[in-house]
Amino acid sequence: MFMGKKLITLYLSLLLCLLAGCREKEIIQENEYEYLIGVSLSNVMEPWLSHTIDAMSAQRLADSRINIIFKDAAGSQEKQLQDIEQLMECGVDLLIVAPGDSESLQDKVEELYQEIPVVVMGIDPGTEDYTSFIEFNDYEIGRLAGSYIMEEQYQAGDEMVVLTGPSGSPISEKRLQGFKDAVSGDIEEEQIHYLNGEWLRDKAENRMKDYLVVNQKADVVFAFNDEMAYGAYLAQKQYRVTGICFLGVDGFTGNLGGIDLVERGLLDATIQCPEIGSLAYETAVRILDGEKVEKHQVIEPTLITKVK
Image (cartoon, rainbow, N blue to C red):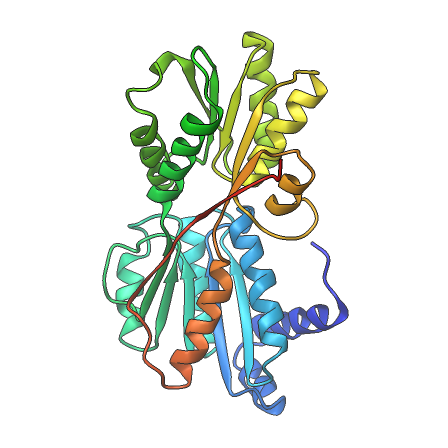
């Protein structure tokens, strides 16, 4: 991930915080930071969490009162609990946490909520002891995708590939349920092939290659994020398969983001959700400034299609 000089300076200061124990609070005070926000992420390999770091870092640079420490649990529930303990030792004034599931952090979130404000994003933590919970309408994302496919792309007899997130992911499960409800009764189950892309471009590319070796045909590919959709596109390009409709989710801007892929004609559509990291940061600052915020915030999706 590319970082400018300001971000490199910020991350070096945060590294000092983690290495120096109690001294980091002195460093923050000397630099006249008013608030320290801790951000615990379950796995930054997931694109939406990687974009969360970028969004929050950019916003933080515009507000000299705020400093942020990011911690990546790399998919480990145990490490995320340890990360949160380290953030508390650093004296954070507010915690933003993206759990990996709905159970592993329940007790910890309840405990922390008694001490500092807690903003949860992405996955329901299994408790209502938090200051604000921000989530995508994942069921609607899946339903919107299914409706678009059946109304605009599907023809009788088409073969469909669906690239899901990791097994057990609540986000993936909700998107899958919305999709299934939208297409139920209009397509035979054996025409839909579900592949686990694990949220990652290279995994999706490999799964799509394996599928094409065996089946040689796909008419529609719906991936639960744009990274996997692009991976599937690369697989069909390498195997010189044509005529596939590709649909992703996220709709990030920038090079090879969902919007860029649609504009280039590599994806037929993406389902865009406003940046959750930006909303979580804004919510956190409002809380620290003494404002009231909504207990539950839901981000609604929008379908973005290429101009014909």
